[in-house]
Image (spheres, rainbow, N blue to C red):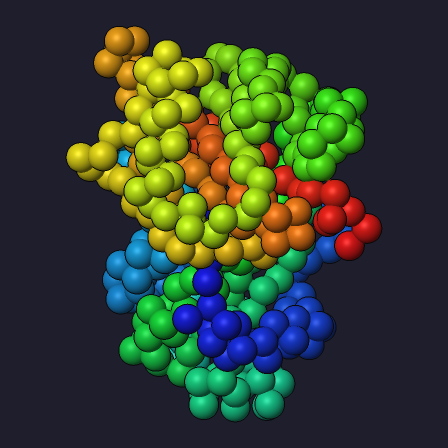
Length: 354
């Protein structure tokens, strides 16, 4: 959803990002003060480029953005939609856009790129491979985010995409998560519950209005919130003492299965397929991130889950935040992503004031 080769990619691309203000002054192509609101199909990124460039870059772009999640059906984090030249005008108000071209391109996107690189310093940077990505907000529509990929030739363009996958993915992923959080809590928030969690337990997270408390067991260090239609839930488990050996995938699965048996009516992790665990960070803390499928034979139910188990040194605790979905006959990713946004609002009393 979110360490998410990163530092190396970031250092190589910071100069491109700092060019944002320069590009904004040259990249005007028909923008005006009265802009329409952007539109989009959730999870779909529009890609505008010449057919020749598309044939060469389609596979690496799909590898960057169409990251597969088994829920258990195949779903993707994003979907790439190629926009032919005939639909160019319609997609100028699309929310998430990728424009890609080379310095040799002659199509409509190539003409746009010519304006982007009209400054000799920028053009030289592209020719030398120093610059390759430019970001632009609200170019043709409100709340629009567009990235422009540029290289001296097609081979270099493809290489830039392949060697900067994490950075390119994070541009849209971070923006979408931010937009989701704003939208989710515009419809209501249980601030009284959030304040109570902080006052009693020293941690909290944002709680949407439709979630309700199912279990609150202070002596067990366990709290579980749930929402219906479709069914989804998030639990927080905390263990005092800060034993970092618990950041272990085997212990995490065992503990999740114990919780499922005691409080979820027999839910357990499906360990035979689609179970992944990796060491990473969560909100700046050392973490083990585990994802896969849960199942319940008695209820003939199952679905995807994401588990963040991490060590918080200031509170001297190990926390486990787990989100899961049960939505038969539906795509699960929209719900799983929103749960992930909730999980990332977690904070402790030591984070307040930072």
